[in-house]
Amino acid sequence: MIRGRIAALALVPMLTLPALAVVEQGNPFEPEILKFEEEDAKNPPQKGGIVFVGSSSIRMWNSVAEDFPHLRIINRGFGGSQVSDSVHYADRIVTKYEPKMVVFFAGTNDLASGKQPATVLADYRAFVEKVRAKVPDVPIVYIAVTPAPSRWNNLENVKLTNTMIRGFSAAGKNLKFVDVYPRMLSESGGPRPELFLEDQLHMKRAGYDIWIEALKPFLPKQ
Image (cartoon, rainbow, N blue to C red; front, side, top):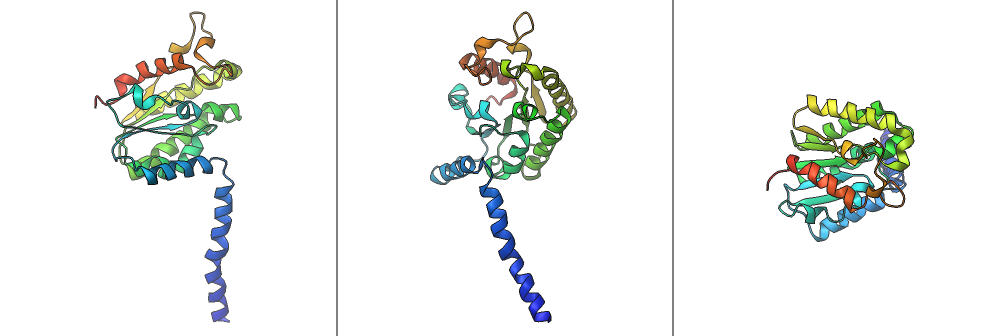
């Protein structure tokens, strides 16, 4: 009887691991993460760079390394992601590089999916905690949720999310909030469509130029 129970317990990992693998394979972002890992295997990034991570506005920032040529930039943005997705993948796309700084942008997809600002803040707090569990006190810079015209109907939640994360960052050690939001508004207080692509969500070069100037004071000199 005892031997039978031991044998049954021995089967638990065999039964559990495939189930977990199926769940992970079902994650829509897994192919992108695997691609990052394949790139790392071929050309491992040096430790101590600056990791840019988050949703599609990071992923589509193809020139980020050229925009900050004096820094070693690792772009690990993956399109459509929410803050919680960066929490989930933090060890695979952030902490393993032992970065000297992390630049983070996400939140627009969260709010568009119906999440409340308090949830976005809680997820960002979880991201900070997970990253710092492996890289203690690493500076983390949060880029404000942008006033995209296509998400203008969710304006109040965007503003509240930015306010909450600004407060969280101000109270924390080595946490910074880069407020690009007002720079992306017109004189009348509305969004500036010329900063965005036809989808009125993702940015043109003019939008990234605003980000570059806003980020410069927060990034290392070398």
